[in-house]
Length: 272
Image 1 (cartoon, rainbow, N blue to C red):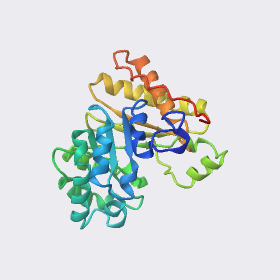
Image 2: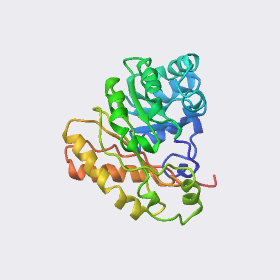
Image 3: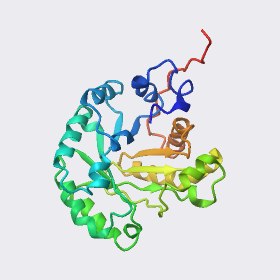
Image 4: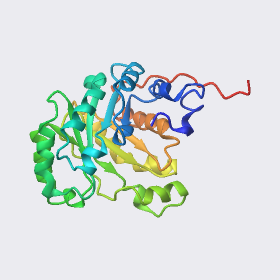
């Protein structure tokens, strides 16, 4: 995500090579979604570079590869998971293992999910994102029981604001056909909740829509939890600035929350 083209020259120096832009991103935000790991397990040396570009408190929520979650549906994946866990080992305790499941993975598959989660290293934080609609109804209790037994978090992906009205741009139209339509869920199961929120092209609508989350996150902080929140828009062009604005909104409710560091200035592009 930190190599997003629209961020070069705005949030990260345009002169930075792509493989070093995480350092620039880390000046704006203190956590990142490791979405690239979904498509391919990175080389361990690459992950060592990620670790070296970020501070000790920077968090990585790294997605389990799709060959494990979507192609083999968590069964017969010992070789792939060993390779994945070895690759991300340099991140240590800063990494959360994010298992995003396909919409076809439903309540009848929870035993498979529990077996998979129990085989993960005990010292690794686990988080699960489900998209089957039945998990948000009567089956919620069963899934919560599974996650509670293995000390895993349920990752909500809140798209309710995004789907509040029809798309008005190419980026919104593209996301309209790809993102799940599921109810908002605000219940935390562990001391490290993880939230994903999708707004609109409109900054005003995006900010207004995250109001409930600012209240929820403030409540979690008062309870002693340490949440991680990711802010998205259809094109993600303004995401780092929006993430900092959300942090400011939460800090207004919980003044003792530590401020984010000021990012390094990004020099404007020049001809020479």
